[in-house]
Image 1 (cartoon, rainbow, N blue to C red):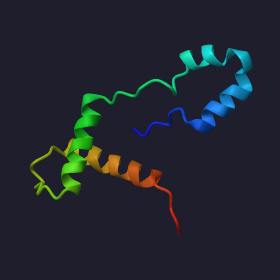
Image 2 (tube, rainbow, N blue to C red; image 1 turned 90 degrees about the vertical axis):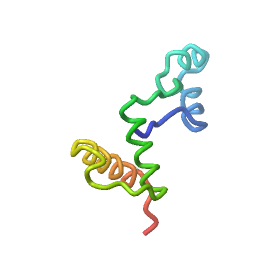
Image 3 (cartoon, rainbow, N blue to C red; image 1 turned 90 degrees about the horizontal axis):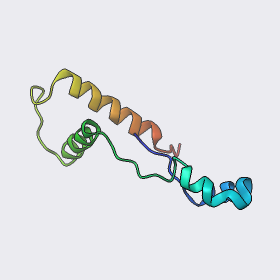
Image 4 (cartoon, rainbow, N blue to C red; image 1 turned 135 degrees about the vertical axis):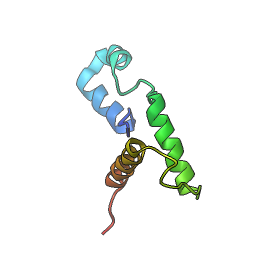
Length: 85
């Protein structure tokens, strides 16, 4: 869900490790490729945004599977947030 893509720190580490082969390594690296979410994941993210914006879902608006998947998505997002205390 939450993708750990290429960033400045990753690039510097790759430059250090790959040396003159950095360009070839970057072309084949999975981190640098654009992430395209599955249609179902995009649907769940859209439902989450609607819920956060205050859309009045009732329990019958979604299937049990959708509610469970939405809950799992929310748990994953919360777990990925840094805790200050």
